[in-house]
Amino acid sequence: MPLSFVQTVNASTLPQRGLASAVARLYRPGLACALALLGCFAPSAASAQVLEGLVNAALQSHPSTVGQRALVASAQAGLESAKWQFFPTPSATVESAGTSGSDPSYRGDPQVATFRLQQPLWTGGRLTAGLDKAQAGVSLSQAAYQEVRQQLALKVLQAYSEWLSAHLKNQANEASQATHLRLREQVQRRIAEGVSAQSDLVLAQSRLDAITADVTASSAQRDIAISRLGQLVGQPVDGKALEAAIARPRALMQNPQALMEQALALSPSIQKARYQAQVQLAVVSERGADLQPEFYARLEQQYGNFSYTNALPETRVFVGVTSRLGAGLSSASNVQAARTQYEAALAEIDVQSRLVADQVSADQALAASADSRMASVRASLVSAKELSDSYDRQFLAGRKSWLDVMNAARELAQTETLLADLLSTQVVVTWRLALSARGLDAVTQATP
Image (cartoon, rainbow, N blue to C red):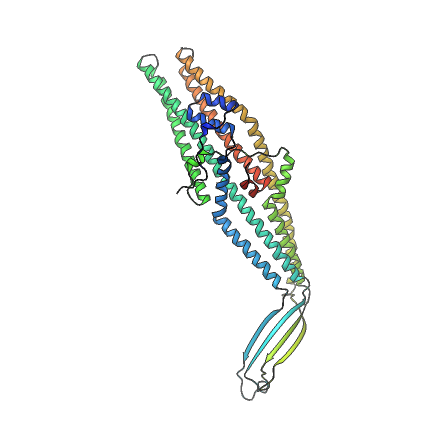
């Protein structure tokens, strides 16, 4: 069954205010309801939940998040393993010797079993560095999981924005198509009455063909966006449910600098880079410990003896020292390589910080531009509608040409399309900023 996150909302019952009300009175009933809904962005419960529902569905079922959760569990298991390295290591060997009868070293028992328990006493910081690396690895995997979730949410948001733009454009194009159909029928009657030229019909038909092609294109874009949303959430999405509850722009904090600081503090990409640096710092300590000797104590119990028959069990305690220098001077080279990787990880923190700051700055500028343009475009839409109606009346009175009427209708359609782009831009930009400044969980679980 198609995925439906909301119940149907009667858009005509939503409040209408200001320019949206004026536009609604000028348009046909179907388009009027859509423009009233989009102009007012009434805070209905359904419109507050539809996009959150899409995002949450994607986060629950998408393979990328499932795989990343498994990596988090793997890192946590690695942390448990690092903790166990501080405990004694048990081992056992059982050996059988087959020798010639004249071998003086193997005249005892044919089989010897040895059980050992070895405890590290001092490792030069290797075990502690391994534990630090494992702990940083868990934090790194969790940050990577949050980054995957945020990227997936942004993909859902982008697909929804594409659907919203295509849906609004399709409504505008269908309204314009109805207008051009009416104009074509009007000019056909006038030609039949002998008061209009055949060229007027050619112009009307060409404009109608063009807007029909636009309707087909916007419908295809809408269907593609719905299909992309379905792929992201893992099951078909009900387009009617989306149409019944259009998501509205998020409210943003007024202080741009505070928004930027929160985005930098909450960015999972920056956190991931920081934890990666912590991992590399632990690797530096771990490689440095290879240059130090390691002291250990070993408890050993032996059953049987190759030199004597029927020997009693023997218990021994050893204290020893060993080295992990590696081949030649390779350990020193490994330390230098680890330090270089740590420096690269520090540089990556700065890279990610700049990327986040650049994206947030661009989104803030885009949001401010959309806000300032919205009133102008809505006023322009009202004027374009009034002008189109006026030209239609003046043409019938003989004061405007047929080309003026057709150009006014085209300008009206272009203004409607511009408004559709602007409305979808407001939604995607404000939601993207909200995700950056408030975090994914806060945005998807709270009403804007």
